[in-house]
Length: 472
Ligand SMILES: NC(=O)c1ccc[n+]([C@@H]2O[C@H](COP(=O)([O-])OP(=O)(O)OC[C@H]3O[C@@H](n4cnc5c(N)ncnc54)[C@H](O)[C@@H]3O)[C@@H](O)[C@H]2O)c1
Image (cartoon, rainbow, N blue to C red):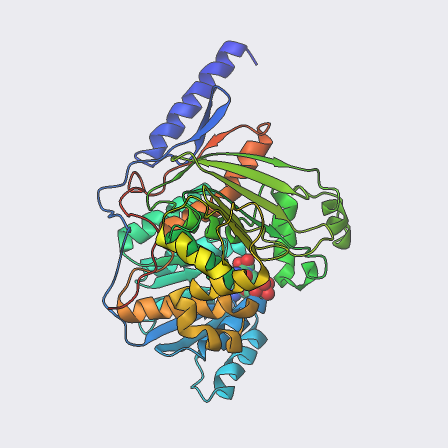
């Protein structure tokens, strides 16, 4: 085709495309000087920021659960141990999964819930008027469509990790929550693990000085589990996507300790992956020969206040489970894997916390060695997070990853019962989930820096530090 005619037709196409978009916000990126810059569209006039959002207290939170596979089934079991909550509806594509989950309720002497099965039955669940909270535990691709529909039908939503699989979906969650004024919490459970909560409490008491760097990861060999997911959804997603597709377990605790969108914000990331060496062996299990996701993906994120987060993802090589959680500050250091430990410099430090630590260990420390096991245990007891102090025994008894899953559900219901802001808001859900697309864009463009969108649209500095809300 003549080059002039081609260029004219292409330009017309772009113009028609732009015109048909009308006032649609642009959620994509442009590459400028070798940097991918994501757009942060203005907040539409009919939306209000969800920072610090609360609703009237709900005495008994009525819950509808969608997705009753491995994770959803155990979530229903956990709810039976929590007061102030009632399971009103259950839904899964597979009828037997609804039935076996009803048995949990019966076993605990509770009334059976309304049951829904089939591909689109979840919509009917969302349309019921006796549900306050829709709890979504399906495969990743359905998380955002289901959450948006539920919020549009007046429900608060809790969504398993990651809440969204693309930047467009992250914005859909933010926009819908802001428009409908409904809570949208991602169910990131690792922020409730005992070590992470206790370390957060220590950081908030200044034991590490200024926290300057945090690390996190999801390193878990899924070899024994690939075929357990419904119709192989997890394999399908990893087969088709490069980048850190499961970033939130590592990123959540790191963001809380660094006060992300409570005084600091993530600005730019760079990501790299290995080739899919073992990934191709996973593909072989499914009789296929292609696999996009690199075996190991590493991402560095720089924050507005000059701090760094490192996040890793690896679900295919044989090595021990590791979430890598580390916190580094100007005066101290915390490490979770493989051995939990702290090193803290008290020499020359004048805070009450550091003096108390000297009393505990018997001398000042230069911080270059881990505290002894006894000193560590005593320190952890002293700084045990108030939430853990409250429900440790019950959490350990009910379990779910050692108790953190129970604490997560307990806190969700507690905050709704008391009309408090939730521990994780819709901006956390978007910020922690957005790494999926952003890391892919960095990697696919030769590991270029990616400037992240600001889902709070400038409100990241309105709150002063991360806090868990507690009823008066
Ligand atoms: N936070 C954690 O520690 C943790 C642990 C495991 C899984 N998860 C998350 O939980 C979610 C579910 O994982 P899983 O391991 O239970 O997977 P799974 O495949 O066992 O369960 C998914 C369930 O969703 C159902 N489903 C799919 N489409 C549906 C639809 N249209 N309507 C109703 N039901 C539908 C499937 O039938 C299946 O029962 C995922 O998002 C996963 O990332 C989180």
